[in-house]
Image (cartoon, protein in one colour):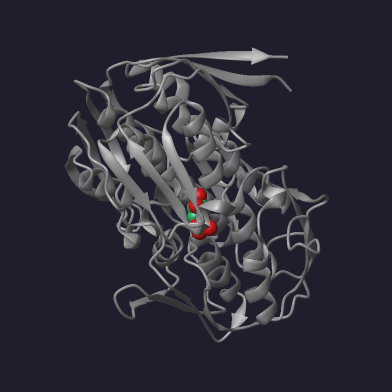
Length: 446
Ligand code: S3P
């Protein structure tokens, strides 16, 4: 396969009005719940990125008739909770942790054996966080000794045991895995999370007519519960634009002088808007316009204009609400005046790459004063020294995109190696970033 490199020309002013592709988390769930529902589910705005396509392909291989995607339109002919069929080969999850962990929950309740495999990055990521609760529910699973893929799930066709599970980390993937397994369990399954994480699974289950009860226990902890053995009814899902993709453009407009950018129809789920709160705390000029709701998810147009930024200590309660946005937030921090400190974000070390180490290395390579810590980073912003650099993305789409945005304020050329991974979440990233005012050249090396 060709190595795709991004050559980033320095500077640029970000202007325009754009729409970024559909939300990745919601796209995954639309296929999963659509497949498990009775009747037809139609989806518009589906993200045609490799991760969501891996989920779609997996359900096709389990016998679900799915039309599309065609310009973001997908039709899923649901087979009901008990209608999936044994696939003929291992299901390839590609780079996608969400596909793997949510599917593990669904597969634990089937009456067939199934194997999940993934690429080099996914095959290093921790899966014990899902095998532990699933085993408590009576599921039989095998992984490597390190608790990584490949994973074999032995479906016994028996009903799982409901559990009341306290998650050791704030993870929507683990919460969703437990709740999805709970559909196949006898009794009420609950997932208690140490801090609120994205709640798309709960919202969408409710939208499919499957009741999930969510409750705030105290300031931080959330508990979501559902009773097994019900049924989901097919419906229409309009996927809003992905705030995690929009984040690269918010950051770009926030750090480039004279910028003025509107990003339309962006998902504003309160469990995802940490990026906006953090940028505002740093002094960014962001206005939310045209607030409305589509299919149970709030959306708005995000209007960003340049304003000088300052370093901050990022409040820990915002970490889970901005968990995918830290690569680009580190880039923003490197341009802000003064020190930015992130703590309480050790989960970043087990994403598609170790995002603390990889981003610290990348920023240091372009002359930024950055210091990785066990659970975050310290960045002394606003004083980059010139240094030409070739950056490695480490199989991580968000590193490729974040380091592209770094080109707006860098003082020397940036080349990013191994960027085909941008297709996992944002296939038109380069077209859009060039449209709004950057100059990024894509070079394919055989
Ligand atoms: C996701 C949850 C998050 C996030 C990932 C998508 C989801 O992971 O990083 O990109 O769709 O549930 P964790 O739940 O492991 O934090």
